[in-house]
Length: 190
Ligand SMILES: [Fe+2]
Image (cartoon, rainbow, N blue to C red; front, side):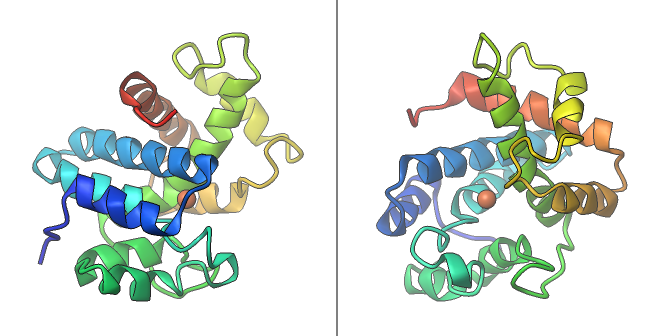
């Protein structure tokens, strides 16, 4: 069953457990990136649903970093979020804290883009424009191959995500840059 949680309600839930500006920005980024991918992948009628999953995916990270993806089900259930959303949220911790495999296209994309959006944003911030609008795959790829750059963004997860989707890395980066341009043009969180 698809969730009935609206995007404004998801924001309220997220903010109940998160106040750090970086976490709010990351939630909005992944939410809008997921919305872009829903349309891109032919799931336009589910774009709100993908956006809600993207928004909530790190709901437990700020308060329970050591129980990331383990605490989320309890927090989300307490707020009436449906099990399909909870499953999708938990699956992005696959191979890290949980053994729930990303199965749907939506889950695989969440897994693939979560870390990658961080890497792309870090690559954008060192440009004079501080923007993804003029950022190209080539420069992201160069940063990807530099382990010390945005070292917290797991290349292993990004590579695994691309493999799950059957996409090569360039294709994944191309699309995620486009998705992040959509975010940059539509963002509201400062
Ligand atoms: Fe995340």
